Length: 171
Image (cartoon, rainbow, N blue to C red):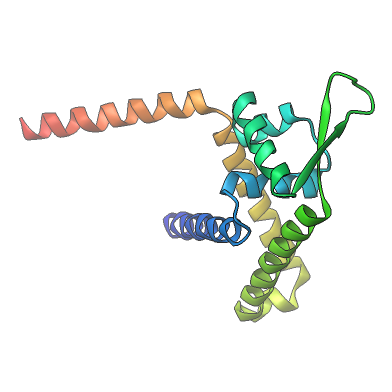
């Protein structure tokens, strides 16, 4: 299990680096690039939803949307059911940028699969099991990430316990 955890950590570190490089490739921050991806995969969204999903304050989200709009990646439009609200959507330029990023991502995954154990290429049941495992891992990480207060409390308790045990050992 420890080896699996180490490999997943390596995947996350590589993913972070990949995301930074992809975002920089279109002159955006990682958060801005992620918002474009969110708009591609989930469709038009209100600034409030964008702010919540990006972990931004409403004011910070507004500034970010302003930057994305100035760069020609998104546009604001009226909400069809709420006259007080707006929807943010991708422009053709924004869609092209994020589709190109996703295509490169897909190519890299296909290349990795081609270099992997041949059983993964030949056995759709094994591929499905791996896909299910990855989905489950992503869900577990999302759940943990959604519990910021619980994470903070648990980490502070662990650090305190480790510090106390080291102090006791030294004394």
